Amino acid sequence: MSSEKYRIKSLSEYQKAYQESVENPEQFWSKIAEEFVWHKKWDKVLDWNFSEPKIEWFSGGKLNITENCLDRWVKTQPNKPAIIWEPNDPKEAHITLTYKELHHKVNQFAQVLLNNGAKKGDRICIYMPMVPELVIAVLACARIGAIHSVVFGGFSAHSLTDRINDAQCTLVVTADGAYRGSKEIPLKDIMDEALLTSPSVKKVIVLARTQMSIPLVDGRDVRWEDEIARVEAQGNPFVTPASMDAEDMLFILYTSGSTGKPKGVVHTCGGYMIWTNYTFVNVFQPTPESIHFCTADIGWITGHSYIVYGPLSAGATSVLFEGIPTYPYAGRFWEIVEKHKISILYTAPTAIRSLMAHGLEPLEGKNLDTLKVLGTVGEPINKEAWHWYNDNVGKGKCPVVDTWWQTETAGILISNLAGVTPSKPTYATLPLPGVQPILLDEYGQEILENNVNGNLCIKAPWPGILRTTYGDHDRCKLNYFSTFKDLYFTGDGCFRDDHGQYRITGRVDDVLNVSGHRIGTAEIENAINMHFGVVESAVVGYPHDIKGQGIYAFVIYNGTEQEMEIVLAAILHTVTKVIGAIAKPDKIQLVSGLPKTRSGKIMRRILRKVAEGELDNIGDITTLLDPNIVEEIKIGRL
Image 1 (spheres, one colour):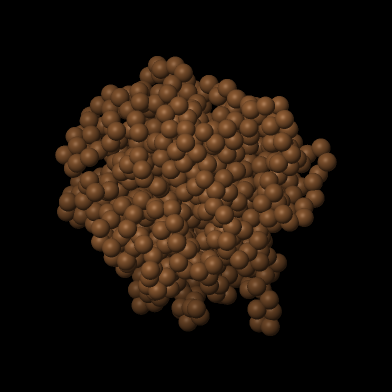
Image 2: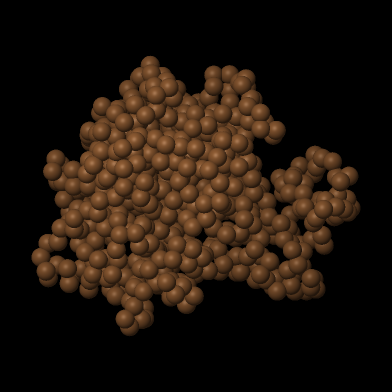
C-alpha cells in the first residue's frame, strides 16, 4: 500500500499531522496527493471562499480516479482480490474479482457505455441491486469521464424521476429486479414507470439478476449481457481513461433536505479521491492482508466511499453484500465474517440494534477471531449498542471506530483512529487532520469552553467537501454556508467534553435520520398531502429502539371516522409510492389542527415533545393561535 507514507501510527503522530494540516494545509495535502497517479500536476493546491461558496482543490491537476483504483494495482498486485461479493441467498455462490479481473470488466463496460453513446460529462443514472456489476458500472462511468448518479434501489418511480430529470441523465443502467431478503424488487418496472416522464434518457442498459420477465423498449433498451458479448467478440478492450481536471465532477448523489425537493450533492475527482483514501487508511488502519466489509448499500455515500473508492484506491479487498443482516437467519453477518476472514466490519447502529434483538444465539459457534476493527456509521450509536458490539462481536479486543460524516463531506470527518487515538462509547471523538470543527450557540457566537452543547460547524475546507448542489449553486450556499457566516453548517447538534472530544447529538434542522438514512420532513409531508382528504400534515422524529429515529406524522384529515382505517393505509401506500418504503411513518395521528403561531408557522418543537412522550414538558404555548389544540394532540398521542 503506497499509503504507508501518510498512515498515522500513534497519538503523537496524529497530533503532529493535525497541527500541520491546520497550520499549513497546502503543504500537508500536497505531500499526500503526490502519492497518487496524475497525468499532470496541479497548478494550485487550494483556493477557497465560503461566502460564495467557492472551493477548489488541486485545480489544474489532471487524473483519472480509476487508474488510482485499478490500473496501478494491476501492475503490482494483479491477482489480489479487489471485490468479494456475497449474494442475498447464502445457497448461491459468492464471487471474487481480482484487481486484474475487475480492471478487465470495467474496461469492457466502459466500452459498452461508449458504444451506447455515452461521453465525457454525460450524467448516467445507475439503479441496480448490490451486485458486482454495480461497482463495475460506477467505475466504468468514471473511466470515460461520465458523471454517475447512483439511486438507491428502494426508491420509488416518482423519486427516481425527480433525480433523473434534475441531472438530465441521458443513459440509465438498471436490472430486471433485485433481491432484498425475502423480497424481489421489480427494478425495471419501476424504472419504466419513471421514464414515462423522463425525456432526457435515450438508452437503458438492463442486467439480468432475477430472471424475471421484463419488456424491452425497442431502440431504447439493451441487455447488459448482449452488449458485453458484442465487446468480447471484438477482443479485449482497453479504454483509455479520460483525463479529468481535479475539479471536474465525479458524481452526483441525491440527499434529502429540509425542503421537499432532493438536492444533488456534487463531488469532484481529485479531492474526493484523496479524502476517501486518506480517511479509509487512517480510520480503519488496514494492512495489506485486511478484508474490509462495509455493509452499506452503494446507493448511499457510505457505499460510494467505503466499498468502492476508498478501499480500491488503497489497493484493499472490499466485500460487497447483497442481502440484509437477518436474512435468511440472524447469523448471516457472522457467517460472512467467518467465511471470508473479515478484518474490518463497518456497519450501522440500526443493524447492530436489530441483531441485538435476536440475542447471542446467532453468534454461538462463529469464529470471529479475524476481526481487528469494528466501525459504526450513519447515526450516533447509543451506549447499549456500543457495548453489545464491543463485547460480543469484538470480544473487547477490537477498537470500535464511531465515525461521523455526511453525504456532503464525502468521507469521515470526526472519528477515533483504530488502535491509535482514544475511543469513548457514543463519542465520535476527535477530528481527522484537515477538519476544523467549532461549536456555535443559537446567536452564532463561537463557544470556546468545553463540556458544552452547540451547533456543529466547520471553519475551513477539507479535500472532500461538496462543491455545489447540481444545477442550483444558490441552494448549496443557502443550505450549508448561510446559516452562520463563512462557516460550513453541518445541521447537527454536538456536545464537546472536557477533553475536547465530540459527541453528535442529532439533527437540528427538519431532517430525520431513520436507520442511518437522511429523510427530509418536507418530502414526507408533501407525499402525505397528496392524498385526497388530507388537509395538512406535520412530520417529526421520535426515539425508536431499532431505527434510532422513527417517523411520527400528525395529519389533519377531512373525512368520516369510518373511513379512518382506509385513509391510514392509503397514506402509507402513497408515501411508499412517492418516496419509498424507508419513508413510511411509524405512527400516524389524525388531528383536527396543528399547533401554529399567529403567523402560521407550525411549532414542531411541541409536536416533537408529544411524539417523544414528554407531555409534561411542552414549554410555552402562549404564542399559539389556538393553545387548546395542544391538549387535544396530547390526549390523542399514539
